[in-house]
Length: 376
Ligand code: HEM
Image (cartoon, rainbow, N blue to C red):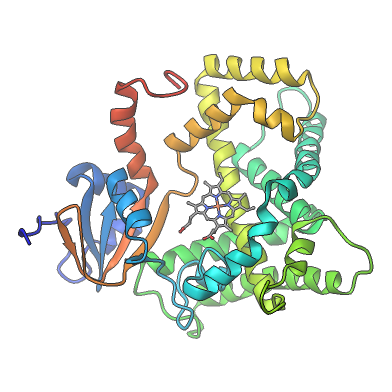
């Protein structure tokens, strides 16, 4: 075997490595390191060694070609990061459990089921627009908060056939507390375990209790309800294993509900916020988008068939995700020694940033004019 290439290492503190830079501003730190060192760079957060991947070739190798070697970081016996919040839902489970849950839940995400949920999504949009109209001409809104509220309403309507807007003041800050804490446990290995009663740990537990109360409350109501609802929760309660006929327990349903809840609303809100921001900066693209929407829909709410025909709108959303990936970071760990692109990797944690991929694609992609939306 030829000698492996040397992986560049970010300079840092003797004891804490790069923890100071990372805690000060994780996103800037990752972007700076990728810009200064290229597609693969290594850094250390106290005792943990990380590799930062920022090239599509490395993504393909790890997420597709060697997905059995580069596995999710979550360990059900000792949850950290998102698993503290999501439990063992699809995003954080792996191996047999993930396969079983994925098989069970596949029918839930069939196109026909999603199509059935479109009216609820459209209703969430309409009520937001009605609210905005009442604010009057020239009123200002915080778009990022509005998009978060919109997608929260969309996901709860499709999940539970109910609005949570009356509980939004409890739910939004609790979710924010949970996700921030989860991110901190990954970035900072010095975070004390949850059983230590620090202020941050107590705040996390309180927020988790709030969210669990809401979700278990809805599951309990539904288990005893006499009439059917056409929503994601009903679908999850109905699915059963083809072989054993087994259904999901309340705990599994809770984990999948909170996973879909978390995975579905913040990502979509980020996509919408960034798209609106980019459109405001590119009025020519906004004009073209309006032309397509006005021409096809003429003021009516789109149905599933219309969505298929909104080619330019889809391109705008795809391009927005390429520029500003709504889920910017994926984590994997190396389960066994391996070689990738001439580099030797030993069992350490890997950190991917789609943001960094974005920088590389931008450099090459636009110069080849391959963008669907020239100049967007
Ligand atoms: C713009 C919107 C979205 C983006 C950018 C996005 C991005 C992602 C990414 C990158 C992953 C892979 C995570 C990993 O492997 O570590 C993922 C997984 C997942 N997402 Fe999304 N997502 C979006 C919307 C949604 C919505 C609306 C839902 C549900 C209603 C959803 C549910 C899920 C689930 C259940 C998984 C886990 C799949 C599995 O491992 O089997 N996502 N998403």
